[in-house]
Image (cartoon, rainbow, N blue to C red; front, side, top):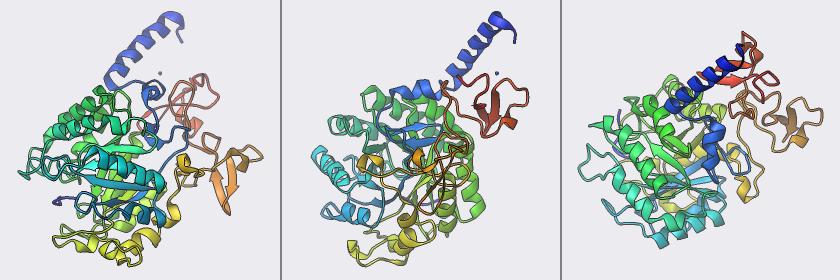
Length: 421
């Protein structure tokens, strides 16, 4: 959190088409199956986040301000105990705030693993760069992460690297795109293989749509195609239509998005937390509320518990954990920790934890007293064809019957058709 604001003519033609396709892919990025082979651990595919075993992982969690409260060593466990499957942990690169040491980061990762949560580690020193004179660059944040390579190596199943919190304020934010690409390149060039997360400019709220409009090129710049975009939703997102529009833009373009921060109120307006949580749940998008405890400067109302006491919850904490679409009812433990997986199909139903839930093989199952969808089955509008492209949700997407369709602003494959190979 920072300062708020707002697709027959035989071989010759086939060869020609292949060449053209190759050229286009060089411009917009390689097919998912090829690009993502390099990724290990948590990885992005078709705009969603998956664990190494192919189980979708949807973040349901909380931000914890470790940087300013390093003595609160029980917070991660306390957050996990209330049902969160992810904790986003605030760190310092030493450029604005004190540097979080490699040994300290290793300890935090161990705490996350012991508490069975996915650890999103973020550098906070970049907050508001270009507007806040004390903020540092994404390049310096990237250097900090490179220095942590030995700590991050081997933790790809457990740790997501959030390169820098809210990089760029409301000045010179057009620099976000090139700076973000450079930072991603720096980490990949150094051999850091974790899934990456990048925050939006404009104090994280992207009211200028800079991240939204440049997300495709930023994603393509990652040789692993393993970058997640994070939008922070405060006063800019005070209506349901604004929330729906922003999140849909990423979903419709097959790009991974998470609400990395949000609250139930803020100094720049009244964020629509009900819409944020509802749309996140229906679209299968992760969310991370701000924050566990320790807020100051007039935004103490964003504390979820009083004085880091898990037994003393605030109204915001009660809402986030136990309200409609809250953490306790929608969070699913990562399978790396023994969870059954989770996630939501495009039709809004949860994915089945096992195909055994579907004895008649129609793609629909029954678990936990409700219908569920078998991942990649007949009822799942997604799933991935052998060539790496997503399956079409309906054959109507292919009017000329060549096996290729068009949905959600990208090519798709008709299941069992000529292109399904």
